[in-house]
Length: 174
Image (cartoon, rainbow, N blue to C red; front, side):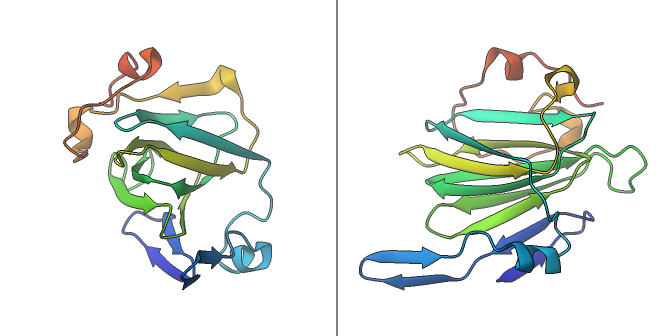
């Protein structure tokens, strides 16, 4: 495993070791002991999966009570993945990190509680995304930030996006 840390405290990209041959590749996606050594949660309470077409943009989502940490991976295709620091007392409040996750380059993006999360699908064949969360889903405290709020200055890929009605009309980050 290779761990990449970012200037925004808590975010980590975990690049997994893959064993390739003419049949494809094998990787160990999740190993509890190795993840504990990295300081990641020892217990995830839910796995979420989405299959999205090219150009679909999901996010920027978060929930307040309980706040969720997310461990995100792309199983197939490619996504542009974004985490925005929304911790009001953080010196990096309003800043973001973006990474490209690909199904053929196994990795995880750890996004701790206190971040809004979103992604867009950049591969023509679509993408399958799996993420583990460390707290129960609570629809009453689910929130969304407008994906293209000017203060965030996220350099999204230049493609035509498909958004849900919820993601098209949520609050802007100020």
